Length: 74
Length: 393
Image 1 (spheres, one colour):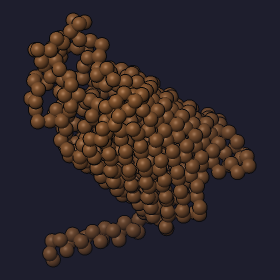
Image 2 (cartoon, each protein chain N blue to C red; image 1 turned 90 degrees about the vertical axis):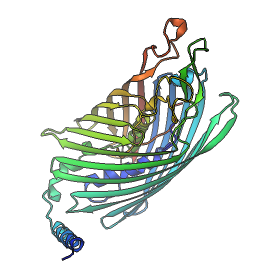
Image 3 (tube, rainbow over the protein chains, first blue to last red; image 1 turned 30 degrees about the vertical axis):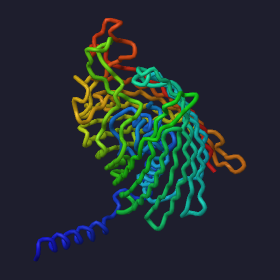
Image 4 (cartoon, each protein chain N blue to C red; image 1 turned 90 degrees about the horizontal axis):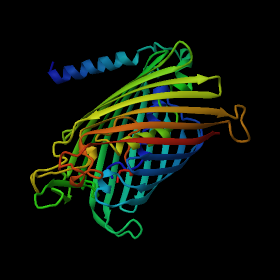
């Protein structure tokens, strides 16, 4: 079998297997995860604002989910 | 000024999507209205921010969010003060964001316009999130396009005269995976690649070079010269754990790398403690460090010594650390008229910035006994206050 075809077949197999994965955390076990204190950032404006403060004063950016730029750096 | 991504709504939309995804199945969050106020003081700057956000579901599948944000800037940072120029400016940002859920897929489309006297930015963002594996895993893909018009106020703060210098475009690709690990632990990884093109330098910042003919020993009137392309890659991993008693700890780490030679590391720890059902108290520690860009120098040996030359403090080697405290008080637990509940939040953050190769030429110089290049390294503290009211309905 051609190498690339073999990779595709293997990939499909993995995907099919993955689709049959049973959730190891059942829906009724997710009460703690659903608690507001487990939210990454409950307040989007505030989170974006703080990242914007850093973004305007640091050389790096991105991948925070709330990264942004803006003024305040003149 | 930072030419790219000068707006907040794109990240707000992205964050909302990621947050929803982490929690499990794609469900639109509650309707809410927020009034937000912020005040940043530090490094010669005073920036007051005011924002209003309204989010409304029109069905279980479709929601609209509108946000208006105003920044009022007064003062100027150290390098602008070195040029004896004070800034007084205002930035107005309007954004609208649409969320649509179909089965286990959530789509987000947002548009943002940010306008200030010398900078106009228009940003479009699209992302989709897919829940899979029994809603334990959420994959998010996003794309952002930003088109910016860059100018410079060559008048005074009170009689502005804006000279438009050029354009900058920015494109960002985001990919994220969030994962429920156990019934107490969630985790996430986000990758973002951003590529910029055009006028990328800050027109208000200048390089300085040694000049024996100058009385103070250097000249500092030459504009910075940046490459007209810039590509960066950032990857962040994060975890959050529900403690045996009702409290949570979180940790994150981000690595950043770009084509200008900057490598940066960001680490953050957080702790969340509810008190009764009325209060949530949070503490936050953050540490950041970066090296300087390859074409950065605090003091060049002579004029035109390099093809690209920068003396923007954002490109200097630096570090900073933050301590933040936040308290949220819940009221109207039984609701009132159309409102289900409300919260009011106060947040104070203190940041200490230290620069390893950016010197304070504002307060020190030859007249104070400091030769060029021997001035003290720049450092400053900033304090950020935030207070906001959130009503859920």
